[in-house]
Structure formats: C-alpha cells, structure tokens
Image (cartoon, rainbow, N blue to C red; front, side, top):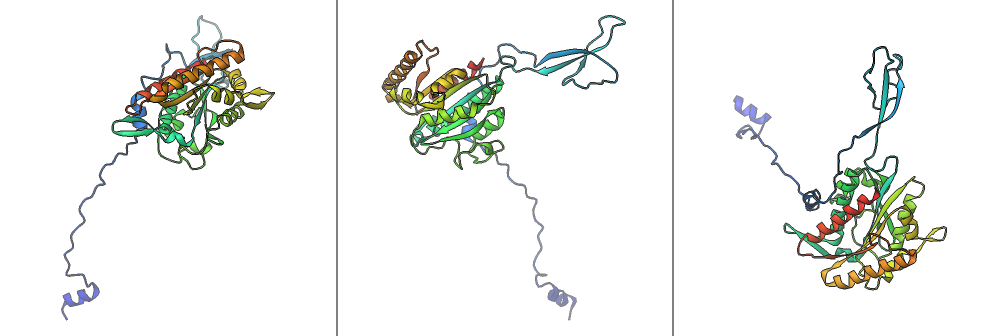
Length: 336
C-alpha cells in the first residue's frame, strides 16, 4: 500500500484542493434614523443660545490658606495671586452656577396626547412620511435641546385614557432623552426610568384624558423643590368652542380644592397646544382663542402670552414641524 493510500485512509478529503480563505472585510454599514436626521437638521436654528457667554464658575468663598490645608474644601480651587508682599496667601473656591437665575431650580414639563388619532400623517421630509406622534417626538427633542442649553430640568408625560410617565423628572439627562426620543429603540440608558410599558415614545393608543396627564405632572413636581416650571400640553383635539380644554384644565387637582391649571400655573406659564390638519385651522384658532379668554375670565386678568394655541399641520412638508418645534423651544426659555 502506497503512502498516498495510507494518507487517504486517514483523510478521505486528501485529494481535494485546499484553497485558502480569501481576506474578508465586513462591508461598512451606517444606519440612518429619519427621526434623528430630521431633528439634527432643523433643531440648530430653532434653539436659542445664551445672549452672551457667562462664566460657568462663580466664587463662593475666599479663605486664608494654610499649608496643611491643601486644596481641601474647594470644589474648583485656585490660588489667588498675592497683591502685596508680606500678605497671607488665600484660596478661592468656586462652584458652577446655572445659566438661568442663580440658585433657582427650574424645569420644563411636556405632556403629550398619545390617543389613537395621533397616528394621522403630519409631515413629509426627504421622502419620509411622519405621523403626528413622530412629529411630537422631533419637537420634544428640540424642546429638550433648549432645556439643555438653559440648564433646566425636564420631565415628559403621556396621556391617553390613562397617564404615563415617559421620562421621570426633574431630570438633567438631556442627551439620553434626546437619543431615546429620536430613535426606534424600545430601550436605552435613561429610558428605563420611565418607559411606557413597551411602547415607543408617544405611540398612539387609547382615548384622550387630558386631565389625567395634568395630574400626573403635578404629582411629579410636588416635593421636588421646584421654584419655577413651564408646562406644555400637546393634543390633537380640535376644540372649536374652547370648552373641552377649559373643562380639562379646570379638573380637580386633588390638592386643596384647586384645579389642575391653578396648581401648574402657580409654578409658571402653562400652555395648551392643539394640533390639527390645515382644514380645521379656522375652527382650531377660534377654539383656542375662546379657551384663552375663558382662562382670562377665570383668573380675572389677561394671561400673556396666550395659554391656548392652535398649530395647523401641513402634511405635505416639514414646515409645521419646524413651526411647532420652534414654538416649544421658545416656551422652554420662559423659565428665566
């Protein structure tokens, strides 16, 4: 028996030609999310930057320095130059100061309607169609970017037949929230603190119980040491008389006999935004004007800016998304 026959017994595939594997590289693939892409494109010109740069550090104390002290007790310690020979060295301690009002805890609340009708088409951009709930997500992200610039905390709530906490507040995790809101990921780092039971953010389902969302927001703010808050409600109810929104705003907060609007307005400006197609703009504008007048009469004074607004949605472009997003960004600056 030849050596080849012996080798064949050991390896029956010895006659096959062995070809080395070619060098293989995974093709590069970049995932693009239309929600995030649209946000990245339209957000920069809509958010307001600080009018002038402010030093992020402010002195909190100046003390005599001792060599044994080191830098203990100074959060951001620096040596102060000696003004005169023979004087005692000192250290200064500084701390970060928010860009808003120094020493104030400010936040922005967003309460969004996630009823079934929020599934209607609301925008078109670069060949993509977006429903109302998706437009609300882009606009919410724009608002969050404004909160980040203004060093304001935030919280996000949903309501349908029942309320849900989408993002618990007061939170300063602006970037995490923006990533979550503008993606189609059910999870996310920060999202686990307030996901809506397996739904994507603002996914439409259920009825329209605005008052339940207002109460949930109030519950989230109480006991948090909030000095001032702006609250924004978005719903696609087109209320031609203003009565629906007024009755929801005047619903009991379950606190000291006050209505939901009274409690929220005690923290700061509270806005109700109705969105609908362009065909309902006339009745929508009239309804939110009537709603604002009802609130003026209730409080015995003219509320400025008007608390009720209607945003007509043109689904053939992204113009309405830009308008609504810019409006939310502007409202978010009113914590100052």
